[in-house]
Image (cartoon, rainbow, N blue to C red):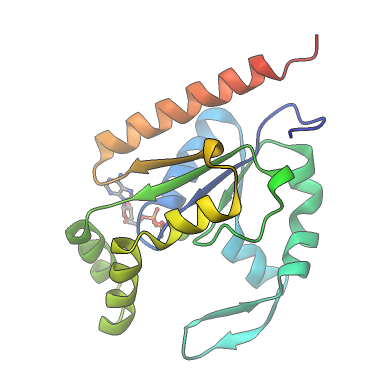
Length: 177
Ligand code: ADP
Ligand code: MG
């Protein structure tokens, strides 16, 4: 349900390194959507209960996070960039894009980011086991979840074109009559 929104809200999710931020930046530029980097919100607005040394990530306070982004998201036209997607209320979200990459590509990208071997392997396993795809299907209506591959810049261009076409159609379908 999109309510009063004039522009849709989209989640771009997937394992670290699949290309979420790159896609979001391009979509924000091309379509004028607001790029919300959820990791940055968690950090900057302190929506967490500290740093988990073992998992090397913030222990997210989900209520604080939702409060921090609520006003923006309720206006619509937001593109949420995060490696998790199960915290946002279904009524906020119009499309969930799960980006996927081949293992060798992901390995190279995470290696280039100097991920420690254990962390790298965990993320590769997560990608192979389709953890984020499953999480998206468990959290949202399957008809709003799409899976797109992001191994090459050509694939990325075609993803952006597809999402742009989808946004235009959404706006036509949700125009006030
Ligand atoms: P994420 O936000 O999912 O962790 P990034 O957008 O930071 O991923 O991308 C990780 C790395 O992979 C970056 O160096 C980026 O330039 C590269 N990259 C992302 N998507 C593609 C793609 N479709 N083709 C080639 N390189 C890509
Ligand atoms: Mg990112």
